[in-house]
Length: 166
Length: 166
DNA sequence: CAAAAATATGATACATCATATCATTCGTTG
DNA sequence: CAACGAATGATATGATGTATCATATTTTTG
Image (cartoon, rainbow over all chains, first blue to last red):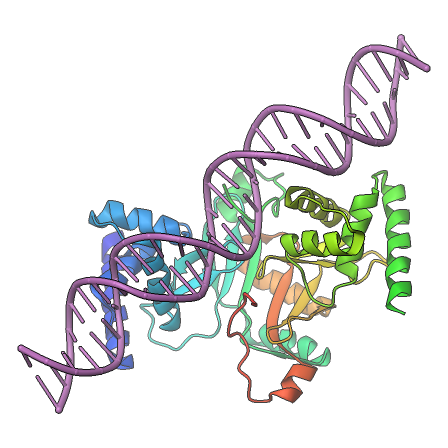
């Protein structure tokens, strides 16, 4: 059923791009599909490699970067700045407009959950920040830790070891 | 008076290292002084260059990375993972133990404030995270926006433009 | 004190992430 | 179809980070 999930997201992405008046070209679509098919975030170079394997077509890293930029602008993908990796937005198929994404990153298996944090909490953050004389842009939080499965397998594990996975 | 501030921090850092049973060698001290003397975060290579200028002594980037690692372990410096840059801890001279640092990063002038966020807010974050089945390690937040001065100079500025300053 | 062990630093190479720049292709439109 | 703009390709290079082995310095200890 993963395929269904991916193709539904792709369909929705096409809709959204059509409405926004931008073009989801075949290659951009393939890059998005590559991200969608990965359980973990990918570097731009990893996207290029997987793209080559999946579509039997080489694609220069430069182009991947540009397509990732495009996908980010259309809110179809996100960049995790703490790991320099990219993921598909997990809410492409949703209809409602989304707030700034918040990410939970498992430092053991590298899976990422894109979660909602209660609005009051974000607001409290904004308040703390404003109290310090700062003006926050939409805060994309990247929180590192262990996911449930990894915590169970290795309860003693101390996360945060390295943010740059092997 | 900046010098006074720096040398006081260095003194304190020596105390802390002595108590921890680790050695704040001359070069490590110089790296820390380099960070302390900068108004903005520095990349490892920038530290190496400033070190060379200040102490008239070349130092290999590899060594800088190692010394930065040391300083981070002793909580004398932090790495900003969203920009791949390093800063001295702004609380070296304080006596109380510190929680995980939270950073406000100005995307225009690149200055950073290391702030305290109310404990309830952090706790609320932890709760949201736990509700998602995740186990958070100490959350170091890096929040991007505009500092007060930059906001005044350019009220219309849209922060978040690029996280990788020139 | 001298030898051995541990710690810190240097040097080299290379992996990885990212961007600048110019050339080429493709799709749209007059 | 010509012309234009958008998208992609190709090449080079810069920036960040790590692996590995060599050397030097400090600490330990017999």
